[in-house]
Image (cartoon, rainbow, N blue to C red):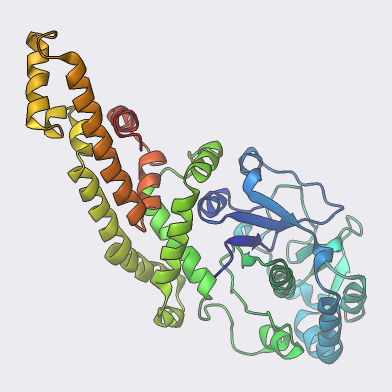
Length: 391
């Protein structure tokens, strides 16, 4: 069974807070690689989500990781220098705003053409080998940031994250749209393929984790439309704590939906992949979500919530007594009416809870009810639902 604890990379701070909110709704835990000597400068959003955010130290990586990189540099240092040597930096373009590290924590280096890695994330032997090959150097700001070609930095951080994740039982996860490389073998040949092959790796087939993350994003955005930026982190945390079993069921539903989806891996365009997953969502989950709404309407939820017409869900005798109560409260038997009403609503609640427990998309329904934006009438209906049926 797949672990639903993730390891974020390549940065220390989360780059996209809306991405983090979606991730927090799905993943049980999201760790990040934070060096011992680095003080984080988290936003209020990240602080509010801190109960589901963990820390992994870069020195937890096995020793053979550094040795594999040193061997790789020893074998391919000359060819790497021809492509990634710092003597060529004048020819490299500046990184765009979306390619740079998050602003939190301050700047990581002076040269906008370089990618920077905090010194604790690079073993001393690896740093010496990089420096000797002319592939990296510390920044003018001091010894804390090591600058190199952005692609070399990306491949190194991907490899580090995969090795740490493998030894911590985590899934490597990124909010970057750059190429997602499978480097788990960490062989010099695989690293050489990533950095020296003539085949451009951008746009290669997506990993299963990337496909799953895109599917989840499509599903969540469908039920919480245009509300993610305003969605309060504390509300996300309360939602997680309230519906852990529904989240587990939805995680399984996502894995089941993608079983046999090998054809998805052949899609090399992210926009096309998202559209195909949107089609899958509409065919499978959106249909089930509509069915769940119908089942809950059959339990009388809409009658109770939409027009406050209890007669639509109460037996004829009790409904008649309600009319009598309006004219002759005592004669109608108020106590008996109350028992009849409560018994009926209790039965309806059982039916509704049964439908929710049986549905693999109950988590989406809960999200739609709890997290989607509501007008005043929607809030009244939602509050009445909680009171009348207790769900």
